[in-house]
Image (tube, rainbow, N blue to C red):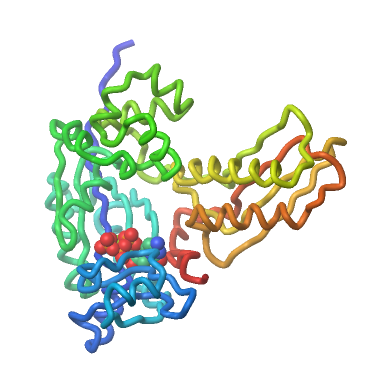
Length: 362
Ligand code: DCP
Ligand code: MG
């Protein structure tokens, strides 16, 4: 049978600029042009995002509030107003829907759009992106950046290139060279754990990744090798809105000898949590419930879980909760043959709405 090559797709990735901070600056004129941080200014608070004025001081997302204040003494802390962010998010999604129904939100401020065939009849994806940015600006008073390319991998990297308020177009002939310059940790699906392993193997950039053959990647990264191999060449055929249907992500491990020793059990659960995080990050599947599973020597299974109001988006929280769930079971009444860890209650595609990240509530 003849293989007809699939038509080239036109994918846009839209990402709002300094999203929470921009909403705050829009709604309170006293905050305009000021260095602001949205998030907790208290002793245990974390910066969710900083205005561009604050970023020039080095203030960043996920930074402890105290450190942010040291870097930028005039920093103004603003308490998040999620209702306002959700409203802005709903508005931009409504703008997207004027152009296409193939929309995959990744969080409140970010989405992929497939505009290969689109409602406006505009052939140029770049022009569609510019119209969307224009509508966002005039209707919401906020700015967005866009990446325009032939797949999700490159569109997402591209939207970050000319931030804030910029567009970057990467054509099919430019994709491989574009990826070559990227640090691997910025490639979708390469989380912090994988990035560290690549670093240990001397793989820092897309070009380094491309220099390794498939056999080498398979030996080190198993079933993910194929994706990395293709990503290094600028190839990615994941469809927009692929996340439908997944219910949970989990990792478990059966031991050759039943484990009873506290230190050994904790070491195992940390290892399992790290490996689970790699999967979560790769699937971009954020869940609200963390579930520990223990199978005992007698094959009885217990599960213990903890749920949060918002999806867990931090590997540190995952590890900490995993340890706490396990510690609550120690000492075990008999050896464990298996430990498992999973996240459930995944953020549904439509409800990628839960932009409130757990980092904030700590
Ligand atoms: N966010 C959060 N905790 C983080 C990162 C982000 O709560 N660790 C929230 C606040 C951000 C929003 O999600 O405003 C969007 O995240 P982005 O990573 O897109 O960051 P920004 O939109 O703030 O900035 P940029 O202009 O770099 O996209
Ligand atoms: Mg953003």
